[in-house]
Image 1 (cartoon, rainbow, N blue to C red):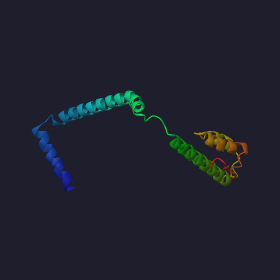
Image 2: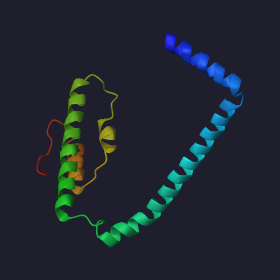
Image 3: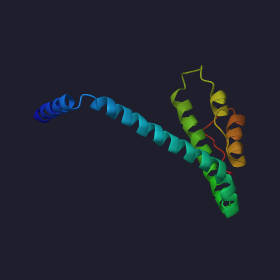
Image 4: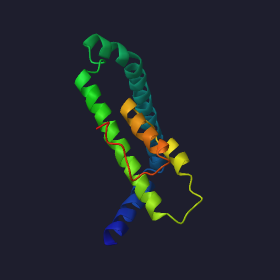
Length: 137
């Protein structure tokens, strides 16, 4: 509290000696913000328009078969976990007959063929979600 009072006193003294100081500081702050925004915008424009060309030239835009397979396996695991989580939700809300479980499952994105098979299998089993197909693992 004492430090705050001292700062207020020093600010009052500065404002007496330099009456336009806060206006100048506000103007300077606006100028700095403007220039930072311009630099950020130009950086995004240059990076956004040239990045595809640079990645293609360096050969970094192609995915390797191993990493594509890893991504496919990861999405399959996530899909199984999602179906199991829905099964738990369905089990705990057994008295709630208004829930559209097929509709809820339809909104889950399938990012790979295996994920699609898992989600489609859960829908085909009439959402008896306790039995999750594990063949795609």
